[in-house]
Amino acid sequence: MQALSTSGIGFWGPQRLRERGLFEGLYAGPSGKVSDEAIAIAKPQIAKALNLAAARGVRTLVISEENMLGSVKGNLRHRALYPDAKTRLRGFIQAVGRPIDKVMLGLRPLDTYWNSALAYGVKRGAPLPKPDDLAAISASERSWCDVVRDISEVVGEADIELHKFEDFADAPDVRLARALGGNAVLPKAKQGVRMNEAPDLSELRVAMTKRGANPQPPCLMVKGTGSPFRPNKQRPWLNATPMICFGALLVRAEWQN
Image (cartoon, rainbow, N blue to C red; front, side, top):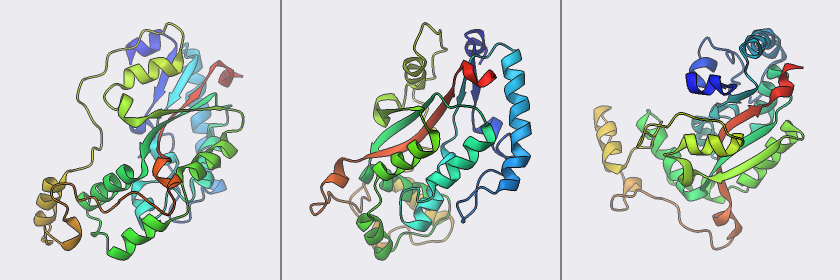
């Protein structure tokens, strides 16, 4: 963080934003809408933090919080891709109250995303998906293009920059440097670190056994992969549509005005 600050770059991540943090109260529940009251409470706290950052010489603020669009748990509950991304993200943008310069998003194929999301959910106590759940996810008409469209309607004239998740999963420092441009000197990221990485099939079986569930149900089945999804022959455009992992908001020098 010291190396970032000397280059005029500030960073707000989940540790700063979540529980008792600057974004407390802005994480909408099942309704998907951030209340006006929550925005009114958070806004002065965020404004104060922005002013302090400006006083310390921050000229570019990076806000990284994937749950601004929703959560994996919510996607599994709705069996759809961030169905209320627009209303959730709008609440955060209103609370920040400054123009957004750029939105960065990581891209991943839909089948890879849902395999990861299902495994992530099961490891954390969610029930195993039933055949009807998998069928509903596979048949969903909502694509990542819809998610990106929702984001674009909320962030106005901000640039939306996309990249392949796999290209920078182990190199967030390289991704950030490209997004910032210029000659910023950034610290090197630790190699091989993956946050919230989805468990493989053996890890899932261990987790299920620990909570007394059947570790080898019919739907966990494909030798080591556990993948319930296959290319969609009826709607092939869904196969090529990328997965969006919300990466970060960039707020440039204008946010001081």
